[in-house]
Amino acid sequence: MSTAVITGTSRGLGRALAERLLAEGWSVHGFSRSSGEITHPRFTAHAVDISDEGAVRAAVDQISDPIDLLVNNAGAASLNALLLTPGSIAASLMRVNYLGAFHCLQSIGKVMVRQRRGLVINITTVAVPLSLEGEAAYVASKAALDALTKVAAAELAPQGVRVIGLGFGPLSTDLTRAVPGFKLAELDARLGRPQGTSLAQAVDFIIQHLPAASSASGTIAYLARL
Image (cartoon, rainbow, N blue to C red):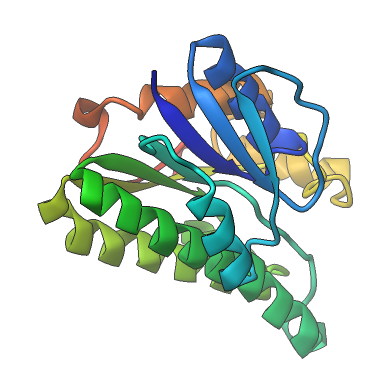
């Protein structure tokens, strides 16, 4: 039986992915600040603030099974013009979107290196290659994550660990609810997805990248036309 750790499983993409993997026979450990509503005999909820290095390390220590998959999904967003973005917002986004993933990758990466196998998927965004205006702090935090993906891929490949990034445009989650509908429609059209992207489609995209033959380590792939 395969075991996955997914961050941000209380709602949105993280929860949808956890439910899909559970349906396919995986055991799933969910890292989230709130417990959510997943009830399944193979699901274990961990109350973890991923920006807290010690809390992440303690949660990983509780997992006795080999870890086959880490999905760094938890994230935060904020729409602010560059010159009006408070420094506290920029720092918060970096803590969650970059440092949170860093802590999880570091702790679980050590487990995977000992196993000589494993897959890490960092969830990123089309906002990085598009350099979307009004999202400077968010884009910077996700660009840092993309750099982490590439460096980690190079460092861990000799130990049999694959690290990739998968990016999406707007999804129907808490991160996009504050964005005006016409803005989302404009971006979806720009991405070649005028009907938008559903959570189910995003989950399918992730599942497609689980096999080693699907993408080389260090790849950052987008469910979009860029």
